[in-house]
Figure 1: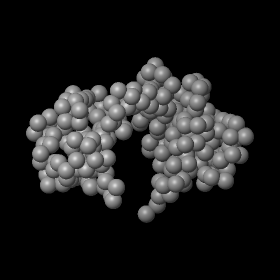
Figure 2: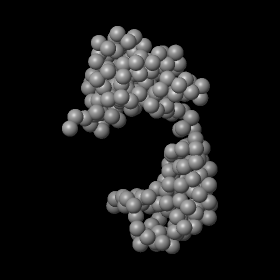
Figure 3: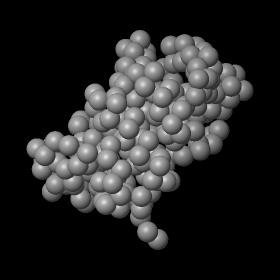
Figure 4: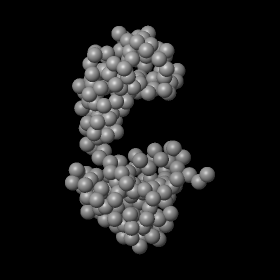
Length: 220
């Protein structure tokens, strides 16, 4: 089975980070940037790197970009170039186009252009850090919609030895523990009889209100 191929446009911190992680995961990555120095730095890491203007449709055509499964527009601070690159990629018929937005307005424009997924790295990271600051047991926070969230909560000392049937978050609070990360491995879809120990990590999904209630009443 052919592995997906990715093209990442803009190799600043965000684009470089995505590219390197995709390579680690075993995928092929073509990195494109106008800055020759940046491209040189990543030439030995990525599958292919090219110094090019990604707003030029003929250039992207010549690179065979339309044959890639997914394109990521990770252009740093040039909103105009980001929008133009997204337009060109959509016109070329790439299956999936993902783009970084620098602001809500930028994101709205990208959505109007038909970009498949818009990412707000600075905003989303700010939200996650804020939640971590106010909740010492919260290890990670991912908003999956306006209502639903996935969180990772560290099990405190007072819950050590409790079985999930005793916590019963689904019946009492409406949220669900979908995994427990233990020192010796992770339990996916744990059963009512599974026991949590101090410093285990519970992965919980639910609405913001459900998780807040569970955290305040159970985690403390």
